[in-house]
Image 1: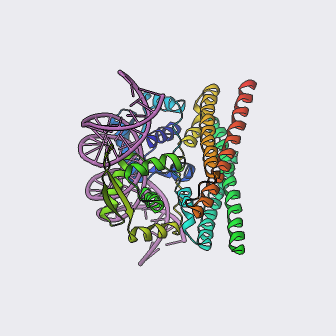
Image 2 (image 1 turned 30 degrees about the horizontal axis):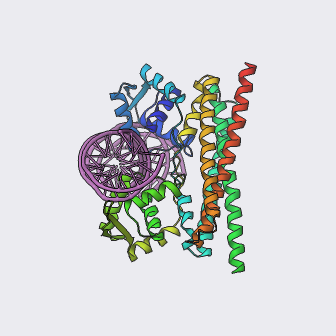
Image 3 (image 1 turned 120 degrees about the vertical axis):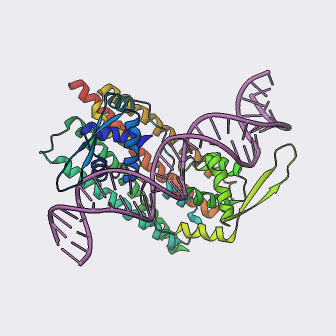
Length: 183
Length: 183
DNA sequence: ATTTGCATGTAACTCGTTACATGATTTA
DNA sequence: TAAATCATGTAACGAGTTACATGCAAAT
């Protein structure tokens, strides 16, 4: 039930259509959360049924009409309740680590390929985070200053964690190569 | 389709019942992957249908009979294919970071509570990892030496990443407290 | 001419969680 | 005598993915 919370948060920033929310997910929080169109539209319908959001249809010319959702009071309360509720138990879903658990079955050069693959992925995540920081540092961005502070911190945290992961992967690659050289 | 891969890996170590696999998930890889009983039993049935595993029933006295699964050749091939296949795109499902994204809505003391909660969770993950390393360092454990090397590395990686996260959280708590003192 | 952006959804499916059901044996 | 361990599953639900369907406007 966490997509629901994320959507509540999005709608607290501004009223939005399903399409807007999807766009904002992709642009602003893609490395933190993601969701498909169909999932978002479905969730909005179910949230309206639960009286967390209300909708109105906005006529547009030259483009399709849109259905704009906004938070109800119930929705706003639910958002604030979630923010301060006890943290979810950490996931335990790390497909990459799961692979390494059995990587002893593979040849060293295959393992190196897998590690270098992952290295590239982490690098590209870090690039996205860096680019996000640039966007945030734009002084014309004054819309939600209270949120901005936290958003910058969270990107910094993301960078720290992924930098640590990168260093670990590099040391792993180095030691697999050394072992392969020995044997 | 990643539980399937994890189960293939488990069965490559030894033939096992659903119960055995669940136990091994919980004991050996809980911080990397987890799955419920019902999910595992369901997946085993579907894997047998796809000819990745085969089963036989083992009679026992004093305890319930068990259904023991082992890898078929197809299953073993599938496991090795997965190990060296291109890495899955990283998830982008970080409920904790998603919360921080909107944390500006909460009061500083509420935010500190949330952060300290998380801090405790990370500490307990690190404790589990440490305990796992102890188990691995037991010299009587000679069963799968090729896998052991990787398993130790992966725990080290887990520790590095989570230590980085812990340090970040600590610095965050400190700066929220400082801000609250100022304001 | 083709792709991208805007905009909404449905259908079918897989993956994951929670609750329930059963029952003997061993340990505290 | 209560709880944990061993052992297998079903049912219902919730969460997430993939593929499909439609159609106009603007930019390349």
